Image (tube, rainbow, N blue to C red; front, side):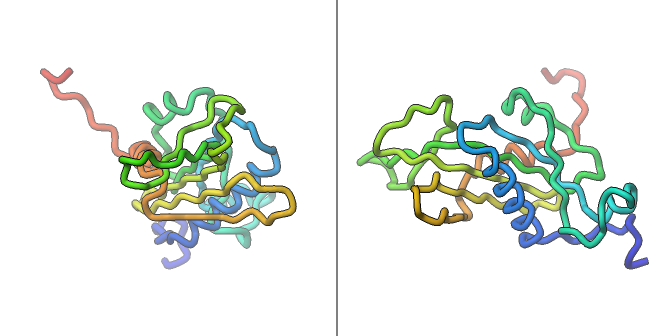
Length: 181
């Protein structure tokens, strides 16, 4: 049946973008200087079917569910999502580093460890998401300057390593074969 919850739905980049924008707004309410946050992206229709008194099926396509993650690198190296989770996202603060003279002129970023920054650097919030179907997207918002509206940016080459690490959390677990280490 077309409306059957067991029928896979083709989720789009727009669906993912809406979820990432919602996550960005949620994390923005906490202010700056926050640790990384990880979110499972659960289909709202599935949650509404299982929890009709709590969640409305009329909501957005995805419901972000924040996960309790102590160490992002450890989580990304070991996470395996249950089949009901359609995607995942990470929100993290970064420092944008200007390219070196001999570089390819592409701005780089590093994850913030402290509030310290060089006057020529800009702090930004990065929200990266992937779907089980292979779709991915990254959004970035520079730390706003007082009296200026913050701008939400994206680029196909933004945060490729983090996108790949998130995709890997959906890769099937491959058993080790004898003789492999």
